Amino acid sequence: MFKKSSTAYQFEKNNKFADRVLVLSFPPALVFIMLVALKMLAPSMAIISYATIIVFNIVFLLPLSFEMQQLKNYVKGVAKGEMPRDEVDVSEKDAKEIVEAVNSMHRFWAAKTDNLEAQAISDTAVLDTLPDPIMMIDRSGNIIGANLSSRVLFGKNITSKNIEQLISSNNFIDAVSKVLKKESESENLIFYIKKPIEQKLYAHIKQLPYQSKGRAVAVISLYDMTKAMKIEKMQSDFVANASHELRTPLAIISGFIETLQTTAKDDAEARDKFLKIMQEQAEYMSSLIENLLSLSKIEMSQDTLPEGKVEVKKIIEEVAQALELKAKAREISIHTFLEDNLPIITADEHQVKQVIQNLTDNAVKYGVAKSDLLIKAKVVEQIPPSKSFKVAQGKALAISINNKGPKIAPENLARLTERFYRMQEHKDLNIKGTGLGLAIAKHIILRHKGNLTVTSTSYNGTTFTIYLPISFE
Image 1: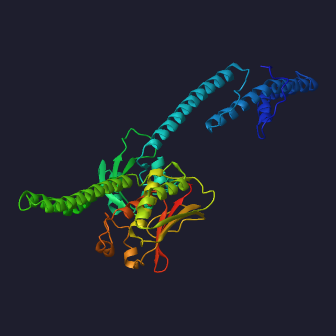
Image 2: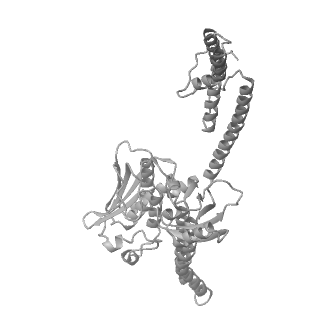
Image 3: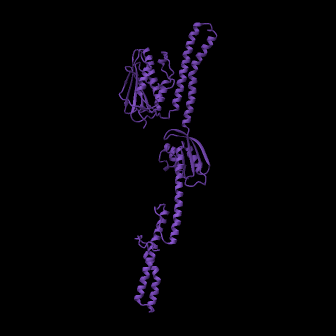
């Protein structure tokens, strides 16, 4: 009991220690007063005896009161969720048992809390790895939990919003309302949103089982159908375009085969002429199929940023060398003007080479004979913005390809990158082509978050400029 008699006790204000001492000392005081009144005890002796009792009570109550104060503060701290660093050390048996019981309860709930926190962290980590947005809502439709995909799609602060603020589709809100009002156990629907980006979404809204605890009463899972629809459209477009473009050369080949089997069966001159045309049409079909496959492949990877490192200077030199013989056949001279120390860029090397080669090949094909073809490359501070798509920020590499020729009319400039579009002048001159080269170039540049500009004047010819970001920040 007197184990802490040497400790410097620090009592809280209003601890009522003095009141306890006086209350405990009051009955002996009455006894001493009666004894003095009956002259059975001298007043001085009564005072000395009463003072001795008071001192005894102080000595007895002081450590007990201090331990009770410690115990009270400790239990209050635990009740508030505070985790005291040291357990209370008391000497009284009953107080020890109380402290041990509190300590045991504290350790039990601390372990429970740690396990629950670990489980919550684990569950959150699992939900964050899921590719589809998942949100939990309370009875009022407030979002009280969301995985990483949801936060990426709708913003980091979605847990402070109501589901109606997040998605404005009336059909979706009605479906959520049915589930929250318990009119339906689950709802499935397809709806569209325009913000933050235009998407087609499939939603599954389901009540949580009554055994679940907490404020969450329903869970909403979303699946983005935009990419699947895009792929489906690309497949249908591919089939439609291929069948349309292949129909004419196939009809020509079939017609000549039929002629060779009948009326021109023994005509050697006609046979040689027809076979040459059939070969040209077969080569056109082969080139067309190759370009269509290339375009479809590029579109499939449209949403994936390239990660390779590319030396554009090397590619330009290789392309210029590869097309040198073709250019000489038309007496066109290829000249390159490359800025010193061109940086290595983050890009798909094969696709970058494909763009530069397509545009340079077009420049040779459509340029005026006995002229110069200029290829320039330099670093620019930023990519020119586009009205129809988002370009990368920061410094970029500008690669321009210029040939000399007649001015291209504005109405034709606007359609150059359309699939299968070919200018009538080129058709009249019987210049071979599939009309897919610039469409392929456009989609490659879009994948790289770059831009393609075209200018055409009567005195300087036509210039195609490719802008590719140096890196993706």
